[in-house]
Length: 128
Image (cartoon, rainbow, N blue to C red; front, side):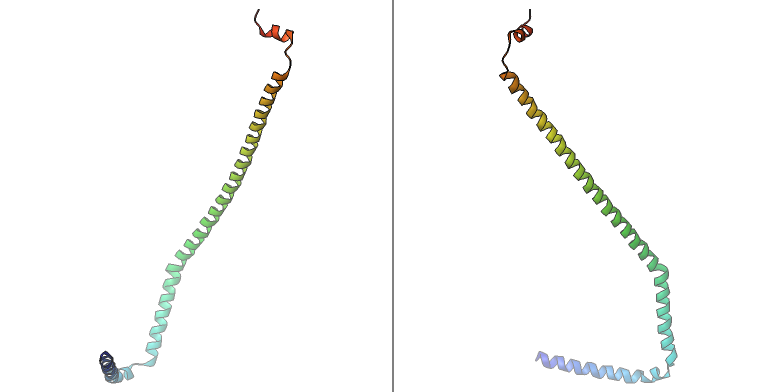
């Protein structure tokens, strides 16, 4: 049923289009051929000049600015990475120095305890 209704509407639509076309055919025959081509060419040239004068400089400036900013961003990220590596190396060196100093400190205490204390050292330590 729905298919039959759709076919009927389709047929009446085509008939209506054909009737409108034949009604407007004399008016279309009186139009000159060059006018249509001239109108399309003028429209294309107008659009082209508007695009060249208004849109392209803006797009070029935006694109150039985006490229510059992205290169600056990449450069700052690279320098940040280098600085981070330097800081890490410096921290490792400082930690190694601190660990060596702590190891030596405890070694010195152990050695001082193991050394036999002489009578002269005792006399120096005790107040008179």
